[in-house]
Amino acid sequence: MQDNSNTKILITGGAGFIGSNLCDYFLGKGYKVTCLDNFATGHRKNIEHHLSDSNFTLIEGDIRSLADCEKAVEGAQYVLHQAALGSVPRSIKDPATSNDVNVGGFLNMLIASRNAGIKRFVYAASSSTYGDSESLPKVEDTIGRPLSPYAITKYVNELYADVFSKTYGIETIGLRYFNVFGRRQDPNGAYAAVIPKFVMQFMKYESPVINGDGNYSRDFTYIDNVIQMNELAMVTDNPQAVNTVYNTAFGDRTTLNDLIKYLKQYLTRFDPAIAKVEVMYGPVRTGDIPHSLASIDKAKNLLGYSPQYSLSAGLEQAVKWYWENLK
Image (cartoon, rainbow, N blue to C red):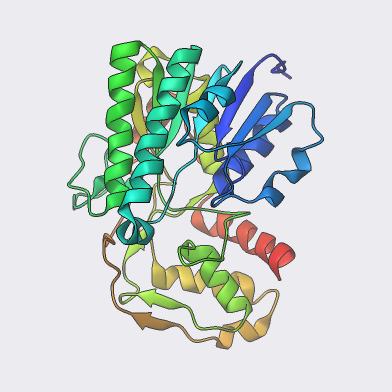
């Protein structure tokens, strides 16, 4: 096994859903990991099992503070920047805070990384950047106009990363996440993602509400595929593979109606009564795009990406985790 003990990674938003899974994975591979989180949306319980690990450092701080960012990057070679305020509806309700965190905080992290001589800055970009582009599958070079304040912030991140790589020579890679799901994704709160929210409602025999007629489709992407992409982006030595963006997805799309069928199929293994829970339909949500499907050819060709989990395989794992941890 490769000795990674001299390599330090900063994971911003490391107590969140994706960030904490990245902490688990890279600590498991022997890296030193620093987690920066202000616990606005992340949870201490997600990383408390690492607090006694000498290779793990928790810094409670905010990316809106340049001083916090500079403290966090100290001694690190790589940054995996996950910290952000997610959710299209949240950004529509409060665009100013989304901008402060997602744009101002992102810029702080870039400045701190540049000043610290970070080797590579890998960051969470978003499929929302495709905006009103109707072409399917989504190819990295073809985007439309953003449909929400959140989408604007994530596109601005890509522009800043591009300018920093060209102006200051810092290596950057953006990962456009497509509907990530899996263990530790928070089912609670007004802006909960659709999969954990539906799972929790089914477990309580509550009827999930689908926005629209259920025929909108998404490229749902299991967390382990996302971990693989972060690692490949961090370690690649292919000079053609850096200073660009990649779709981070499975490369298949599923309607919300089909998603419900899968969820019921896996949940009824634990509780047959869930089969009888009805689904309700509501109005289409503002800022939602009808269909999303990623081309993952670029990631396959330049990074060697090979996603291991389809939606159904990932859902089976996720549902089991929710049942064991949240019931």
